Amino acid sequence: MSGSLRRFLRRAARGLALTIESPSEGWLVARMVVWRTVLPALKYLLPLPRLVQLMDARPAAGRRQPEREERIAELAQRVFNGSTSDDDCLERSLVTYRYLALSGAHPLLVVGIRRNGLASGHAWVTVDDAPVHDSPSLLTEFESLLTFGR
Image (cartoon, rainbow, N blue to C red; front, side, top):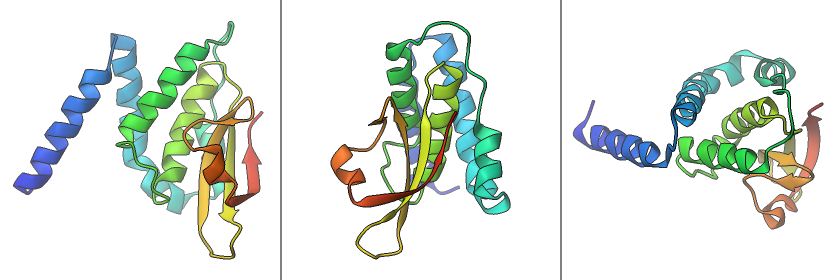
């Protein structure tokens, strides 16, 4: 492993560690990191409906906790290094979708294609019709093709 890669990984781990506020958040981040590691391969091995089914989770019993939902979205964003790249939008969205569903939110995973005719796609998550990571103005550039959720 090169020295610059080691330094990058150390900085990323320190930055992520600074955001963890409790042992349960540490466990959540650890699970997100594992999914981040395996999803790039899984998205090529499994058809999208099967991949979404794998990531779907039974919600926890009880009332929704909007603060918890916001924290899940924030931690997922951190795990993906704040990336808004189209290269990992599907993985970030799948991880966010999974843990928001577990928390009792009713997320939708949306897959779309750019309206301007360029063959670029994007995936995002919404809760209560509001995008979790993306700005609404960005999403106006995309036409929704598939939506997954309860």
